[in-house]
Image 1: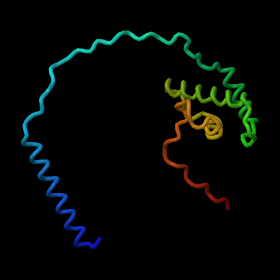
Image 2: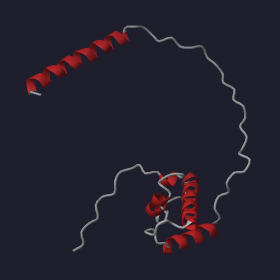
Image 3: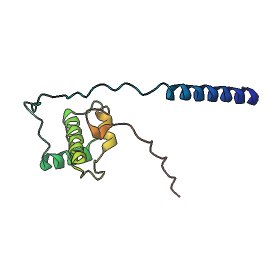
Image 4: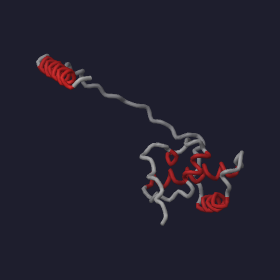
Length: 135
């Protein structure tokens, strides 16, 4: 697109936006629905809530994950269960405000869990910077 055509398109869009703003502001106040009160029923706790992992379970799983070979296919069920335990522990610590970025082998475990089932395994965020070259 040529610069003159681009400039004219921007001016036209600005005119339309200004006209819409003026017409929208002059239409009067929006109708406000009458006040309503919503009464909700008390919710019951789940019948069998999943207990938080014990410190002993977290320690045992951390030791297992430290020694694990994540390149093996298929991964052992015990390793997947330990990764799930560590992710659940990270979730509980995050909710309690005591996480402090301590989730050993997060990338390996969350990749094994297909980046799901845990707040600790959410794949969003900025990408990691490239590794620095060593001299």
